[in-house]
Image 1 (tube, helix red, strand yellow):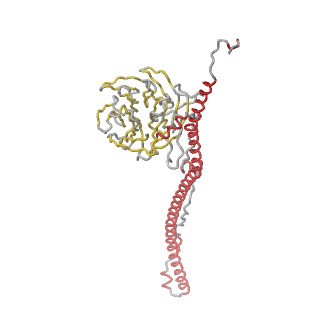
Image 2 (spheres, helix red, strand yellow; image 1 turned 180 degrees about the horizontal axis):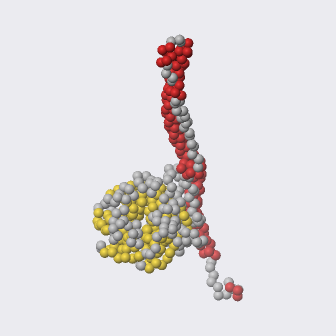
Length: 465
C-alpha cells in the first residue's frame, strides 16, 4: 500500500472478494443442482427411453408391413382362384363344342357303315329290281363337315414393374431431420414439453354451415372468421352464434382470410388477383397482382401483410411482404438459388412466429418451410415417423402460439402436429376425433380452433396448461 507502484489505486479487502466469490459458488451450485443437471438428466432419460422403445417401434413397423404383404397375398390368391374358375368354365364350353361335333361325325360314320353293309348285300344279290332302284350316296358323304378347330385360351401375364409395385405397396416416411442444428435454451428444455397437456381436450364443436370448410382466423374469443368454398365469409362468437356474413367481391370463394389487429377482415381473391380489406361492409383494395395469383395470408406483429402466391403458369411460388400497398420483401429462393417452395397452385398457408420466423405449410411439397425474417432458410419439416400416420404428410393450415410453438394441420392423417420453433416434433393432437383438419388458429387465451374440411365443424381444443 505504501509503494509507489500502487499509489492512487483503490483497494478492496480480500474478505469482500472472498465473500463475493462464495456467493457465486453457492449460486452456481444451486443452479447446477436444481436446474441444469436435472435438465440434462431429463434429456438423457428421454433419449434412453427412445432407445429402449426403438426395437418395439420398428417391430410394429415391420409387423404392419407384413400384414400388408399378407393382404396382398390374399388378394393375389383371390385373383388366381377367380381366373382358374374362368378357365374351368371355358374348358367346359370347349369340351361341349368338341363333343357335339364328334357326335355328328360318329352319326355320319354309322350311316356310312350301314351303307357299306347294304352295298355288300346288293353286290351279292341277283335281284334286278333292287339293283335298278339303288341310289348312290357318295355325293352326300363326300360333303365333309367343316373342320372344328377351337383354339385354347392363352394366359398373357403382365410385365411386373417392380418400381410401381413398390409405390403401390406403401410408403415409408423418412426420418424427420431439420436441415440446421437446433440450439435450445435451458428454459425451453425445462418448460415447453411440460406446458403441453398429456391429453388435449375437445372443449366445444360449432357448426358453421360451410360446405367445404377451408379457413379460420380468430381475432378474439368472440370474433372468429370462417370461410369455405362459397362466396360467404362468416363471423361467429365462441358460442357458435353467427354475428356477421360478408360476401366476396368476385362471387367465388376466397383463397384465404386473415384479420388485422384493429379487427378489419383481409380477403385473398385469386380469381380477381387481388387482396382487399373489409371494414363495416366497405371494401378497400390493398394489392392487385399481374402474372401472379394470391393464395394465403398472414398479418405480422408489425402490421405488415405476408402473402403466398403462384405464377399464372403455375411453375413458381413465392412469399411477398407488403407494408400497406407496397411490396417491401420477396422470398423465393435459398442461398444457392433453388426454389424454397413448390411451383404450383396448391395451398401454402403462412404464419409468423414470435421470433419473426416466417413459416409456410407447403402442401404440394409435403413440408413446412421456415425462413428467418431476412428470408434465409432455417429448417424444413417433412413429418414425424409413425406407425399409425401412414398417409403422406400434406400440411394445410398453420399457426403459432405464445410459446413460439408451431401447429399445423395434417389433413390426410386427421391430426395436428406440434413443433417447437426449431422444428423439433413435440406431439400430435390426434385424440379429438378430427376429420380432415384444414385451417387452424390459436386465440389469445391459448385455445386451438380447427376447421374440418368436409364436416363444416369448428373444433375448439385445449392443448396446453
